[in-house]
Image 1 (tube, each protein chain N blue to C red):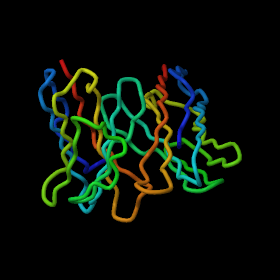
Image 2: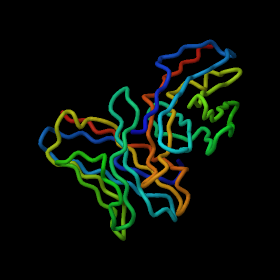
Image 3: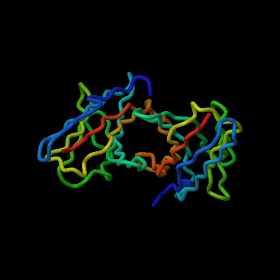
Length: 113
Length: 114
């Protein structure tokens, strides 16, 4: 079946550091790929998405590129801020049927000033 | 996730009681997904509903759990005879008609079973 594997956390960085959170997937067909962010006590917010190979999603300084050859969708940001502290989830949308989201286990990111 | 409403935000139940979780979609959204998030884990799909129809319930536990989305009113996830293992955050998500690859999440209901 479809699955998403994320880099294990927690990840702790200093402000202005470079961020990479790895995400790889296994899927039938060509799913859409997403990064969601969850702030403490809140629901998930869509951070960015890509719907086909080589697409780059970007938002708020975060980027991720849909790499079909390596089945990856790594999240990057050049200079993180304290306000980026949250849990980040990589997900795919199944191609068939209900197109439900399949999530990775999440990566908790803490940015220290 | 603006516009997707869930209530209650926090719910405490004793073992054996019933829990009812409500989700009101964004205006114009007629499909609802329910997901469960166990502590320190990712979200797992439970059920997908359209108004008055269950489209996919492949993630629902076979017993004690049910979901509905009536013609009028919110979608309801119902858990009968709760057990401690049901303690989790339950999120609903909706999408606009025909736009399947962008789901908008509610703030979740955090269920604690004592």
